[in-house]
Length: 407
Image (cartoon, rainbow, N blue to C red):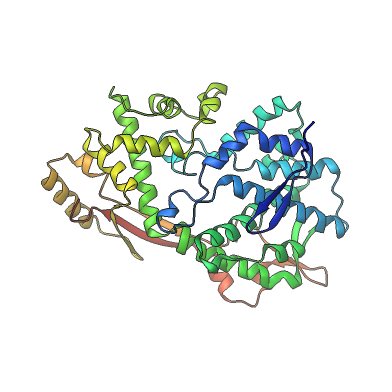
């Protein structure tokens, strides 16, 4: 038997330990190893050259923070059994295992309404069969079916281990210092009252900083206009590839990518075969396909692939007000005349949309502060920071994309 209590060296937290042999075997599993080939931030490296970290990094970081959390909560007298502890580690380790290439582009282009969460669940259920039902409790926690609500909140809420890791990690790899939150301090301030997660009063400033950091990271990094246009081009390129395949045009692509181009995949027919093929799909399939498609006869596919590969993207303008349709029509007409293409083809290069950013959702879930008196109230009420209320408002911006003159 090989030694399964290995240590990972993480640039952010230092050494991360693997708590037990089962977790080690899950990390070793090919489904999980695939996350080494899925970038955490899609095409953001076209803006921030350092952002080449992967979902694999992130999942291990989340597990590390969860280990710290379990220790803190137990120290404060919250009872967490060994089985529950293990379920928390497994659920957070595998929470992102269903992500497709470049993280989100897949969900909006070559599969119909299949979210990465639902694929994560399929992977977990499949692994549960292989590991003699040892993931059953973790799956219940992941789905929110387990009666202890705080355990689900640690996996998925407005202050979960997922966010606690990705804000810190993404700010580190992009070099955007504004996102650097003190996740260790936030974890130290966690507590549980009536099976719900709360933050002790003295952690209030760390939570304020966390929410502000989240807002800044969304505008500066996740919704950065160049990342936005690159992701749009990627989705449109995959959509075009699927259209051409449906018309019987054969495209050079890996067998895994070809399967998703040739078949209409939705939640209803996402079976074991589909899952197996999906598990072979990663960023490299998409990149190698784009390199092939750069020389394809189809005007749309060729140009979209070329733009992404050579980072010669569309022009994008962000506005606070809705953009008038005339602007869209003007750019569309210009493109049609220049290249003698159809309106439908032009629509791949001229389009508009909107993005919104809400750092804190007051309506759906709360971050609750526990006062010394025992009173519990929402962070927005508990805080003397006026801008927290503003952070719970949705801010929407509108964008228009069109080719630069030299296309």
